[in-house]
Amino acid sequence: MKKYIILITVFLLCSCQQKAKEQNVKIRIIEEGITSIIDPYAEIEILADSIALPEGPVWDTNTNTLFFSDVINNSVHSWNKNEGVKTHISPSGNTGYADNLGEGILGANGLKLTSSGSLILCQHGDRRLALIENIATTEPEFSTLVDNYNGKRLNSPNDMSIAKDGSIYFTDPPFAFFDLQAFSFVETEMRELDFNGVFKLSPNAQKLELITDQIDVPNGIALSPDQKTLYVNKMGMLDGNPEVKKIDLETLKVETLFSGKELAGQFEGNFDGMKVHSSGNIFTSGPGGLLVISPEGELKASIDFGHITNCAFDDDEEYLYATGFVNNPKIFRIKLQY
Image 1: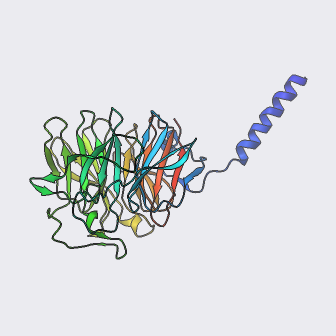
Image 2 (image 1 turned 120 degrees about the vertical axis):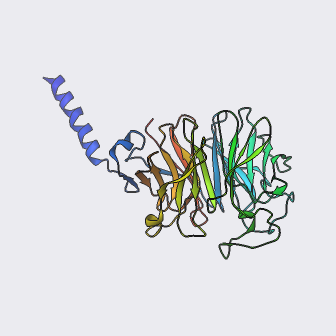
Image 3 (image 1 turned 45 degrees about the vertical axis):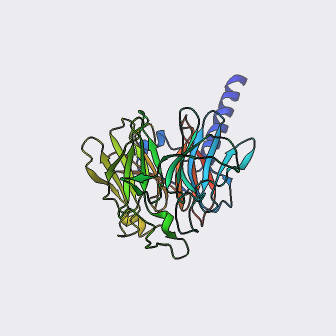
């Protein structure tokens, strides 16, 4: 009899705890199937604060460290649970290598790690893709991967995705010529390309191929798990129509996967950085925080981090990390179902 009383007591305690647990109001589940990835009861952690403009998060599984950029302060930082936040590389994206406005958002933006552990940076101010050994330094020595297309200097590489064969896909909006106070682009003779491109840098021939020049202010970029589709965020800063675009990499046909125009009228935030989960779902910054969009273009969930710039997963997809915008200069983390 005593055994049954204990079992009933344990059951009742568990039931009470489950009832007491409430869904996080900042997590909006639209399609129930997404709860296999997103835990609606998960807490949003703040790992860092007061980073001027955090961007470009990437996870290093070798050191269990998150690296991210501060685009305004021209630096790359690191975070891990043992050491917290530390400055990693400074300067990061504006060293005098190329002409730019001389102020604004000129540091490195998108970051990636190579298979050998080196760091690739999208440098706004230096207007190139650059490579560096992944060690802490205040005297960085960058190697240029690419800085021009057909002899004309790139605008300012912003974000990138690396294919399994080593090809680097990257976006090239003109943020080297962006007035942060006026929040607008500046017309200048320093700009040599008259379009905002999405490019592919082949690993062996070092040949730069233009994928498309038809996306208004392309920003975040990511490949589908099967490597057949390239997703690109169109910020819509020029035409007021933010969208997630998809590009068939065989035909190079560009289509709209998801329109954010309606959401942009309701919430703060831009289609900025993105990542693709192993499930094929797209995790992207957008109006209202972070949006989870299916490969078919259906909005499945949103997480209200506030206005964010980008996101990243650790290698096991146990955690999702997000970087905030200038009015929300934080580094966030949320635990996923995995």
